[in-house]
Amino acid sequence: MSKYVLKLRIVSTDEELHAFYKEKVDKMNTNEYIANSHKDSGFDIFTPKANLKIGPGETKLVDMNIQCAAYKIVCNENVCQKLPSAFFMYPRSSIYKSSLRLANNTGIIDSGYRGNLMAAFDNISRIGSTFPGGVWSQDENSHGRLLQICMPDLSPFSVEIVSTLEDTIRGCGGLGSTGF
Image (cartoon, rainbow, N blue to C red; front, side, top):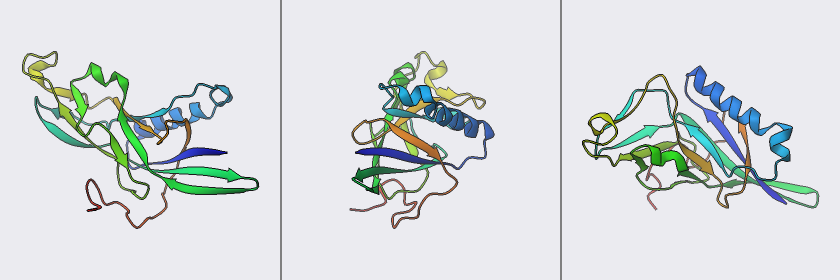
């Protein structure tokens, strides 16, 4: 038997962001959710509460203010192992309602990465789009949901909010930092 668990560290001081994640994780731990045989494959990531503006044809890197580590828990007879696992960051299906696209289509998060999750968004709108002046913006008083975390096989997983993550050799080296 095996299952995945995601350790989530919120690095923002925004109390509302902490509350959103806590509410989401608490909901996943209810008896009703646990008993449901049709669980979600993705865990929504909330965009930071900031004045984000991305002009037409522009690409911007956005810090999601969270750090994560995924593990596959594999149990055989009386022994369980916690194996580090890579995971994916995908756009939510509702991203079509915005003019944003994830620049690399899929974020592959290596098992040893412990830095902040970052997302590069392209604004594909043109002048005259449904957004004033073709500029996509998020109100600084709201948290959007454009992305989700998924495990490699898209199986459901549990999420635990933690205050620290295990150190790795890779650590916080960001986008394209492995050099391999």
